[in-house]
Image: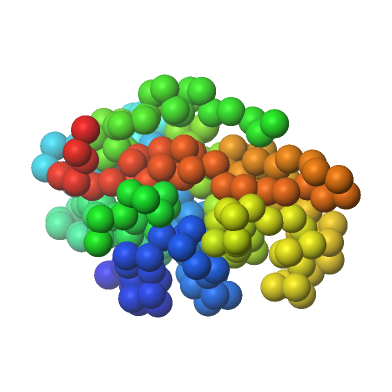
Length: 119
Length: 119
């Protein structure tokens, strides 16, 4: 199972970054997720998984897109998983990864300009 | 002036991360901005600037919130500025910073779940 983000999800679900100053705890939790997205390989992995048929992909589906070793790709997948951005499920030989849309939607809401919030 | 993000803004303005695989160029540009957000001090600075009276703040308004030196805070502000997240304008003794909402809105759109896109 992926690591959950209870603090961020509870406190920032519908409150954009720009509405009020973040606490130290809130900023630490959020920074961890943004840091996981702050790498080109991880962003490409994320978009490949999300746009793959059925919304899930295994390492076997992903390696051809990169000039990287399997262990390196697995490391990046682990970072995304630990940040709560993707989740993985083992079926037979492979772990199948899918995006956790709740986390991405939470980040999207946090970044919204104040005027564009609908909740 | 802040560094612009023409590639990301043109190519990803209304196209979420999850709709199609990112190219190497797109992911490199986008990762640079997420990396700038991947630090708790920078996230707190950003929220302090955005929520400050008038939507802008100088270093003199920000230092009290941190147990950090002025040069360290200035370094973090520079990273945010170079990523196109904030801009600064010198008026008299101080540089006044404000958030660039276009960049945050672009990131927010990129992270949206496919079903929530309205464009």
